[in-house]
Image (cartoon, rainbow, N blue to C red; front, side, top):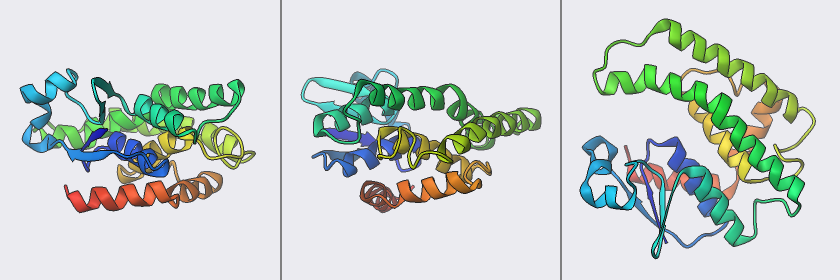
Length: 209
């Protein structure tokens, strides 16, 4: 299997963390987004969306971090609860992130990073403020859940924790305060201390930016 990543991609980072956590045998390859390699004909043939991460396994091409993380976990028999209700909880939290916290995060990323990098003009202060507000409202739901559970889908670490933690940590780098609440801070530290998360950070740092 080959996993295509970029060190600056939080989506790639969380997929790589799960790959390491479940000891998936993947060859990690860097797509240089800064040089536009994601738009090369060769890469677009693999992933027409021109994004990372991408998992290639024989003839299978699997983009999207959530799908990659779920697939690797399922193949390994790890990081997914054994019951239908437990798996639904994992899916619920991934969906929640994509619809709420992740959406606020991506607006911040666009305004504060993407615009500057591609010379698209200054950040819109009103949009930044709204993204912070929306993210904080979502983060309050996260904090309330973690006040009663060790992890998002209950008392056992799952794919959901790696997925949402990726958003929370990246948000902190954008100035968001989502990780400051005590239960969220405790949970984030626990996820980031997992062997897969530690190994992914080290590997991405070795690639540089």
